[in-house]
Image 1 (cartoon, rainbow, N blue to C red):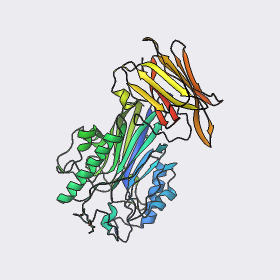
Image 2: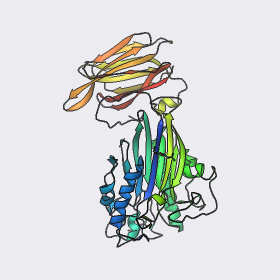
Image 3: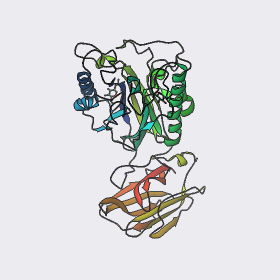
Image 4: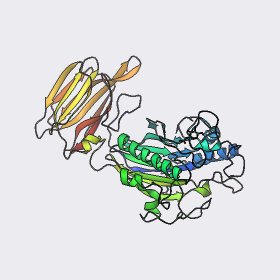
Length: 434
Ligand SMILES: *[C@@H]1O[C@H](CO)[C@@H](O)[C@H](O)[C@H]1NC(C)=O
Ligand SMILES: *[C@@H]1O[C@H](CO)[C@@H](O)[C@H](O)[C@H]1NC(C)=O
């Protein structure tokens, strides 16, 4: 199943197809300097456990919708102890086992996956993981961590956290360029058509021309929020290092927040800021050697398709010409054939098929989906499709737990999102204009 915003990991079989909502959210990225004190003090005064406790309580106090942390190693528990975000990734371990990357969110997210860098460099210390022993430089074992966030009803965004290779020796630059290219390639494969946010520690600067940070713009169509909102859309070529805490947003840090809209969601960055002054110890000292950065975004449903799938996004005016539902005790399969011949078929071939051929001016406008329990799991049991002229096709066994999805006026069902196997495990409907 490749076609979707898919792999909905929700436990229920029914995924509503309510119209997508509008609103705003904000994000923070912060390198929390969580290497063991004995290896790396990060030139931060105070006790790391105490400082990590403080960071966690600031995360809660300011309640950012999504926080990406890097170097979250040996003081991870102290951050989570005082933070109260409801959705958080589990630590992958301290030094030298973990990636140091975690996500803390007010929004439900799923599908997260840690991916290791293919290339690392030992040029500036040991950025590569060694099987035995470690030096403090091994903090940069360097993974990226994409998650799919349900920002709101019908609004999904792919979030990528990363920590790229450090240093400025030629081998470091080569490794870092390979890291960023690896993320860009991953986005090309896994986030086709989707809205994307990449935020984390890139260890890159636009002002270092050998740094490959521009790959996100050139390959993925991402916009850097700092370049857009603070630098008037112009990538700097002259170096402008920051103090910590930074007193100006104008200077450039290696931590970045980049984004793009998707077929189903429009994103617009509205605010960018160094949050350093919000993350200080009681005595005014810094908590970490990086300036944390934040950005705000507004989101709106995409203008072309609702609950789109990339295959549909490539078509100019999709319309269902025929649909088939299959079922017996439960729902076995669904398929729709578009007027141009494109077919989306999901589930298995069991059960009895009911088929409808639609007239040129007839659209699939409504679906009733019923779920029930099978072997302790929630499954789809029944689907009834209704067209704009009131004709129906149904399959499976109706239950008392049903949801009706009706395309908004002037819209029609042209495809699906969900998860399938021999049966249709999860299902939602994709709408396009008639
Ligand atoms: C940024 O977004 C957060 C969360 O939606 C909101 O509370 C805050 O007021 C926003 N800040 C600005 C400057 O827009
Ligand atoms: C980095 O150094 C370690 C320890 O000496 C070594 O095992 C590893 O192969 C090196 N990696 C690279 C890419 O040079």
